[in-house]
Image (cartoon, rainbow, N blue to C red; front, side):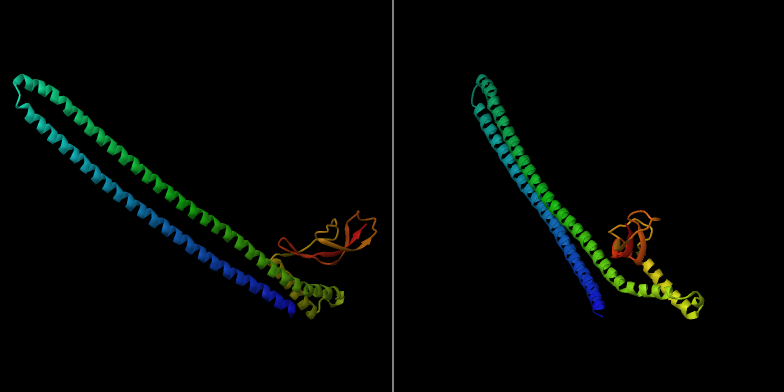
Length: 273
């Protein structure tokens, strides 16, 4: 009864651990959704801020260009008024000399416009680089969280499988003495009583039990005639036998069983020296 209670406790512990694993998985999914939503919101804000800054700087550049054109126009009108008061020869000379300042002013205006354009382009590149860096950081963070969650999921699945196998192994250990008693009972039946209906029913139940154990992965360990292996066999007696080689199992006192790749019970054997 105590063994069965321990088995129930093991199964309950496995179910509780599976429940906690599901809760942790749901929590991790919520964190990933929150990180993804924050990533989308930050990217949208960066795009909005970049668009607003581009528009503002474009308006400032346009106003500076218009102011430069107005100053150039006023300067040209003043030069034309001064030129009309002089003689034809002086007018020609003045016109010749007047073209040079105008040309210098045009070059100055173009230089200012070029500098403003370069500043705007440089500022835009910096903002674009900052935005790309922020996106990369958020992407890396999401990828790290997803990798951690995947590792956690694999670890919990492995632990859950191990807990289940341990619970099954514990139940099988309790059933093996029943199998042993069936084999002892059938081994004690005489040849004359083998056709008895009671004995046949007894044998059918035994075969059904062995078939059920085989279906869930329980296999007997081969012993007689095999080399002694301490990983599978438990030597309780030694003997001399000229017909068998050294370190060979001569007799099996109690069958050993395996569940998948785990030893449920070692074979109890007699080994030839």
